[in-house]
Amino acid sequence: MVLVKSEDNQDLDKEWVALIKDARSMGFTKEDVRKVLLCLQESGKDDTKETAV
Figure 1 (cartoon, one colour):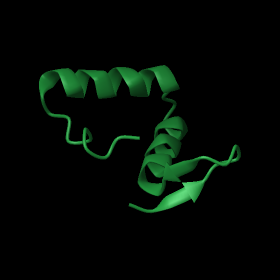
Figure 2: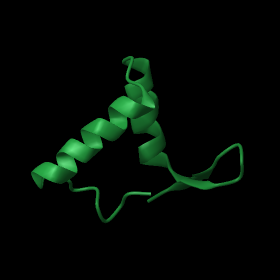
Figure 3: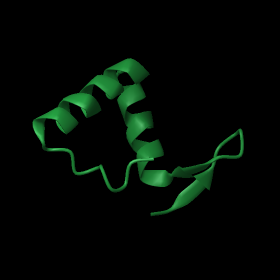
């Protein structure tokens, strides 16, 4: 995991930042991303449990 500093000085995972930027470029909102992650978690297919920020 590679960490980067955010504007408000928080450590962020570089891969998560890239994922969110890609989602934004495709027109997804933060709420859309939350809904997708929640659906994945509920379906038991969430591989991000151990690495989620």
